[in-house]
Image (tube, rainbow, N blue to C red; front, side, top):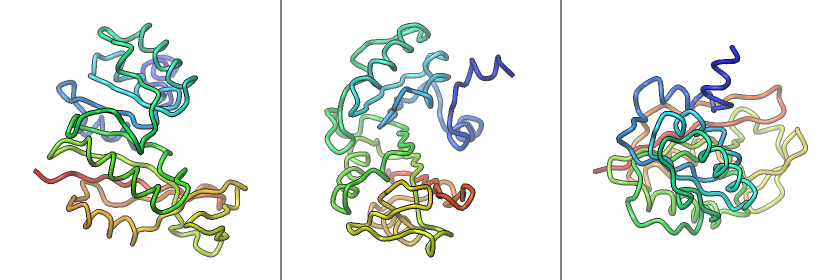
Length: 203
Protein backbone atom coordinates (compact mmCIF):
# COMPACT_ATOMS: atom_id res chain seq x y z
CA UNK A 1 0.00 0.00 0.00
CA UNK A 2 2.83 2.38 0.88
CA UNK A 3 4.45 1.72 -2.50
CA UNK A 4 1.23 2.79 -4.26
CA UNK A 5 1.05 5.93 -2.12
CA UNK A 6 4.64 6.80 -2.99
CA UNK A 7 4.07 6.12 -6.68
CA UNK A 8 0.77 7.94 -7.20
CA UNK A 9 0.63 10.40 -4.29
CA UNK A 10 -2.82 11.83 -3.50
CA UNK A 11 -4.00 11.87 -7.12
CA UNK A 12 -7.69 12.55 -7.72
CA UNK A 13 -9.39 9.19 -8.31
CA UNK A 14 -11.17 10.46 -11.43
CA UNK A 15 -7.90 11.72 -12.89
CA UNK A 16 -6.35 8.33 -12.09
CA UNK A 17 -9.21 6.84 -14.12
CA UNK A 18 -8.08 8.93 -17.11
CA UNK A 19 -4.58 7.50 -16.76
CA UNK A 20 -5.97 3.97 -16.64
CA UNK A 21 -7.99 4.65 -19.79
CA UNK A 22 -4.86 5.76 -21.64
CA UNK A 23 -6.10 9.32 -22.19
CA UNK A 24 -2.92 10.84 -20.72
CA UNK A 25 0.30 9.72 -22.40
CA UNK A 26 3.98 10.66 -22.31
CA UNK A 27 3.76 12.17 -25.80
CA UNK A 28 1.37 14.85 -24.53
CA UNK A 29 2.06 18.28 -23.09
CA UNK A 30 0.09 18.41 -19.85
CA UNK A 31 -0.90 21.43 -17.76
CA UNK A 32 -2.07 21.35 -14.16
CA UNK A 33 -3.86 24.70 -13.93
CA UNK A 34 -4.16 25.45 -10.24
CA UNK A 35 -1.71 22.77 -9.18
CA UNK A 36 -1.59 23.39 -5.43
CA UNK A 37 1.17 21.24 -3.94
CA UNK A 38 1.21 19.06 -7.07
CA UNK A 39 -0.71 16.08 -5.76
CA UNK A 40 -2.20 15.32 -9.18
CA UNK A 41 1.09 15.29 -11.07
CA UNK A 42 3.47 13.40 -8.76
CA UNK A 43 3.16 10.17 -10.72
CA UNK A 44 3.46 11.92 -14.07
CA UNK A 45 6.54 13.88 -13.00
CA UNK A 46 8.24 10.74 -11.73
CA UNK A 47 7.35 8.85 -14.90
CA UNK A 48 8.76 11.40 -17.34
CA UNK A 49 5.56 13.03 -18.60
CA UNK A 50 5.83 16.57 -20.02
CA UNK A 51 4.12 18.36 -17.16
CA UNK A 52 3.65 22.09 -16.67
CA UNK A 53 1.99 23.65 -13.63
CA UNK A 54 0.65 27.01 -12.54
CA UNK A 55 -0.82 28.35 -9.32
CA UNK A 56 -1.44 31.83 -7.97
CA UNK A 57 0.32 30.75 -4.75
CA UNK A 58 4.09 31.19 -4.83
CA UNK A 59 4.47 28.71 -1.96
CA UNK A 60 2.54 26.06 -3.91
CA UNK A 61 4.66 26.55 -7.03
CA UNK A 62 7.86 26.35 -4.98
CA UNK A 63 6.64 23.07 -3.50
CA UNK A 64 5.98 21.64 -6.98
CA UNK A 65 9.42 22.80 -8.10
CA UNK A 66 11.06 21.06 -5.11
CA UNK A 67 9.17 17.83 -5.73
CA UNK A 68 9.87 17.91 -9.46
CA UNK A 69 13.57 18.63 -8.97
CA UNK A 70 13.81 15.54 -6.77
CA UNK A 71 11.83 13.05 -8.85
CA UNK A 72 11.45 14.25 -12.45
CA UNK A 73 13.97 12.78 -14.95
CA UNK A 74 13.86 15.97 -17.05
CA UNK A 75 12.66 19.21 -15.51
CA UNK A 76 13.01 22.97 -15.90
CA UNK A 77 11.89 25.42 -13.23
CA UNK A 78 10.09 27.33 -15.99
CA UNK A 79 7.59 24.47 -16.17
CA UNK A 80 6.03 25.62 -12.87
CA UNK A 81 4.94 29.25 -12.78
CA UNK A 82 3.17 31.64 -10.41
CA UNK A 83 0.17 32.62 -12.51
CA UNK A 84 -3.58 32.95 -12.24
CA UNK A 85 -5.72 30.60 -14.32
CA UNK A 86 -7.56 33.55 -15.85
CA UNK A 87 -4.34 35.13 -17.14
CA UNK A 88 -1.74 32.59 -18.27
CA UNK A 89 1.43 33.35 -20.20
CA UNK A 90 1.32 30.23 -22.38
CA UNK A 91 0.77 30.54 -26.12
CA UNK A 92 -2.52 29.56 -27.73
CA UNK A 93 -3.05 25.81 -28.23
CA UNK A 94 -0.08 24.78 -26.07
CA UNK A 95 -1.42 21.67 -24.31
CA UNK A 96 -2.91 18.29 -25.14
CA UNK A 97 -4.41 17.66 -21.71
CA UNK A 98 -5.33 20.20 -19.02
CA UNK A 99 -6.14 19.42 -15.39
CA UNK A 100 -8.32 21.83 -13.43
CA UNK A 101 -9.03 20.15 -10.12
CA UNK A 102 -10.90 22.09 -7.40
CA UNK A 103 -10.10 25.47 -8.99
CA UNK A 104 -13.05 26.85 -10.97
CA UNK A 105 -15.34 26.99 -7.93
CA UNK A 106 -13.16 29.76 -6.49
CA UNK A 107 -14.48 32.14 -9.14
CA UNK A 108 -15.65 35.41 -7.61
CA UNK A 109 -18.58 35.81 -10.02
CA UNK A 110 -19.85 34.58 -13.36
CA UNK A 111 -17.57 36.78 -15.48
CA UNK A 112 -14.54 35.53 -13.53
CA UNK A 113 -15.65 31.92 -14.02
CA UNK A 114 -16.10 32.47 -17.76
CA UNK A 115 -12.69 34.15 -17.98
CA UNK A 116 -10.99 31.14 -16.36
CA UNK A 117 -12.77 28.67 -18.64
CA UNK A 118 -11.99 30.70 -21.76
CA UNK A 119 -8.31 30.89 -20.81
CA UNK A 120 -8.14 27.13 -20.26
CA UNK A 121 -9.81 26.66 -23.62
CA UNK A 122 -7.39 29.09 -25.30
CA UNK A 123 -4.28 27.14 -24.31
CA UNK A 124 -5.83 23.75 -25.17
CA UNK A 125 -4.86 22.28 -28.54
CA UNK A 126 -7.52 21.25 -31.07
CA UNK A 127 -8.49 17.70 -30.17
CA UNK A 128 -7.15 18.24 -26.65
CA UNK A 129 -8.99 17.37 -23.45
CA UNK A 130 -9.89 19.41 -20.37
CA UNK A 131 -10.44 17.51 -17.12
CA UNK A 132 -12.20 19.65 -14.51
CA UNK A 133 -13.48 18.88 -11.01
CA UNK A 134 -15.53 21.62 -9.41
CA UNK A 135 -18.18 22.17 -6.77
CA UNK A 136 -21.77 22.04 -7.94
CA UNK A 137 -25.31 22.23 -6.61
CA UNK A 138 -26.37 19.02 -8.36
CA UNK A 139 -28.36 16.91 -5.93
CA UNK A 140 -28.03 19.51 -3.16
CA UNK A 141 -30.12 22.35 -4.53
CA UNK A 142 -32.19 22.76 -1.34
CA UNK A 143 -29.15 22.66 0.96
CA UNK A 144 -27.12 25.56 -0.45
CA UNK A 145 -27.80 29.21 0.34
CA UNK A 146 -27.33 31.88 -2.36
CA UNK A 147 -24.90 34.67 -1.53
CA UNK A 148 -25.13 36.48 -4.86
CA UNK A 149 -22.94 36.40 -7.96
CA UNK A 150 -23.61 32.65 -8.33
CA UNK A 151 -21.77 32.00 -5.08
CA UNK A 152 -23.40 29.85 -2.39
CA UNK A 153 -22.90 28.90 1.23
CA UNK A 154 -22.48 25.13 1.49
CA UNK A 155 -23.50 22.97 4.46
CA UNK A 156 -19.79 22.47 5.26
CA UNK A 157 -19.52 26.23 5.94
CA UNK A 158 -17.52 27.09 2.82
CA UNK A 159 -18.65 29.48 0.08
CA UNK A 160 -18.17 28.49 -3.56
CA UNK A 161 -19.16 29.45 -7.08
CA UNK A 162 -21.52 26.61 -8.00
CA UNK A 163 -22.53 25.14 -11.33
CA UNK A 164 -25.11 22.53 -12.21
CA UNK A 165 -25.44 20.03 -15.06
CA UNK A 166 -27.52 22.43 -17.16
CA UNK A 167 -24.87 25.16 -16.97
CA UNK A 168 -22.03 22.75 -17.81
CA UNK A 169 -23.89 21.25 -20.76
CA UNK A 170 -24.73 24.72 -22.10
CA UNK A 171 -21.12 25.79 -21.67
CA UNK A 172 -19.90 22.66 -23.47
CA UNK A 173 -22.16 23.54 -26.40
CA UNK A 174 -21.06 27.19 -26.39
CA UNK A 175 -17.40 26.12 -26.56
CA UNK A 176 -18.31 23.71 -29.37
CA UNK A 177 -16.73 20.95 -27.33
CA UNK A 178 -17.82 17.42 -26.65
CA UNK A 179 -18.02 15.46 -23.41
CA UNK A 180 -15.63 12.53 -23.40
CA UNK A 181 -17.09 11.31 -20.09
CA UNK A 182 -20.63 11.80 -18.80
CA UNK A 183 -21.00 14.37 -16.05
CA UNK A 184 -20.40 12.66 -12.70
CA UNK A 185 -21.28 14.15 -9.33
CA UNK A 186 -20.35 12.89 -5.87
CA UNK A 187 -22.20 14.14 -2.79
CA UNK A 188 -19.95 14.06 0.28
CA UNK A 189 -21.94 13.33 3.44
CA UNK A 190 -24.57 15.92 2.54
CA UNK A 191 -21.97 18.65 3.09
CA UNK A 192 -20.81 19.44 -0.46
CA UNK A 193 -20.76 17.92 -3.91
CA UNK A 194 -18.16 17.79 -6.66
CA UNK A 195 -18.84 17.33 -10.37
CA UNK A 196 -16.37 15.98 -12.92
CA UNK A 197 -16.57 17.80 -16.27
CA UNK A 198 -14.50 16.24 -19.07
CA UNK A 199 -14.63 18.06 -22.40
CA UNK A 200 -12.75 17.62 -25.67
CA UNK A 201 -11.97 20.48 -28.03
CA UNK A 202 -12.91 20.09 -31.67
CA UNK A 203 -10.23 19.74 -34.35
